[in-house]
Length: 285
Length: 320
Image: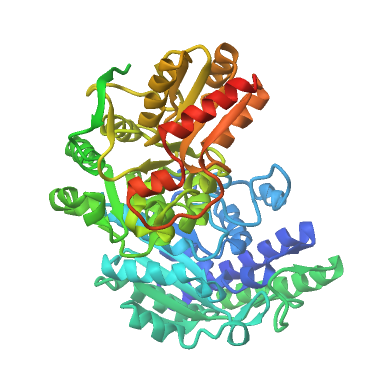
């Protein structure tokens, strides 16, 4: 298929995920909206194009695996899993409900389609390394993807994992680094300056592809290149905006976890739905 | 079923050699067995395994946190990982990784922490875990083990290949007093009554099992009948046996190469309080840090010996 049309379709899918994620947050009036919004396009590409999976067999051994190391961004993936049929969309109402199956942070034992339990930041890279290594040992042609936040890179365990992935040449491992430039207490440059994340990963022996994480064609190219790279682990360092596409979350400093009023969400949803309609119109052209 | 050796002396096999040979034996028939270490392969005695099975032996470098996460990930793909580091670095340093990536995630990870307590000897206070079991005991569903000799260690290591969950095994690396005859088998979660008695029960673990047997012999000379239990599983603790010993002997002494706070003494006391409350005395380190020294010096320094058990047993009996 023509790549330009495919990217337009993926834009529609991304906006569907955004609307569905915001709707899900809307049921409870609070949540980790900032970091959920910055990964929408990346997740749309994973489930719309790049990952191998079967919603009817969430534990299929030969599937690609996704570790959401920034586990608080789970709601974006929950919305995506619902759209893709891992569970009924009505289940999205269970977000953060006592006894529910959609906890604030991703949990492999609660949610069909969630491959790993995360939430204590910095741990996802290590389990992703183990999954990639185990798949390789058994000759499974699966890719393990891990989404890591930039603020999360403050945790030293990430850098242990980066060394390990390089040492074992885990070419079936792809890290998506969400460089949205913000963390809970403010801008990463103020809280704990990470410097040039791409350069640091290169220095750790990773193949690095940098791009705008909201630009679907650019992200598509980066994911394709990362999948193709066969000499070791690859990282897509994607530059994003925390809260992207959510009118009351975007562009403010304190957007990690937000309590919002129903009318704020109504406005944000109206805007996001308009963007979705635009994307659909662009596809029809 | 187990059979006791007739005399107490150092076993011919080192603990670490029993560990390595058991894992090699398992790996021969089981492709899912994988071994991880954090730059302590030479210390853990696992060099032969790394040589024989290079594709299933994973050197993680000095990064224990990553090692636990990698093991969790490997188990997610069906592997059966055994990780090793020195006790403090396999427990307190990686508590959150064990908690979240392994236990809370309900994955399948075995962790061996070597050089428990005073057996860390010259490595001193930084390397001398009197707290590893306490740190991990609050993690739901974890199993905590301390086999006392190479026979027990080998049998438990073998059993762990067919279990599912998170298991931490304290392992002295070098010599251990041989307690069990080869071929003895062990039931995880059940204590072994090594000697019968009616006046007091000594509940011991690890290096303190031999001390407990010696104490029981000394007590017998003084007309005191002491029962001895090898409580090699600290969690889940054998509630039924503790209650029965409380009922039948009316007094308990715990003996551990570990802080009495949060360890075996605490586990036994909690159980006794809920079942058959009887006087309990605890032999172990009493909220102190480790230090350098020979194992003999340290055993004397922290009073981890038969004499202290004898004294404690008499005190427990007096308190009935």
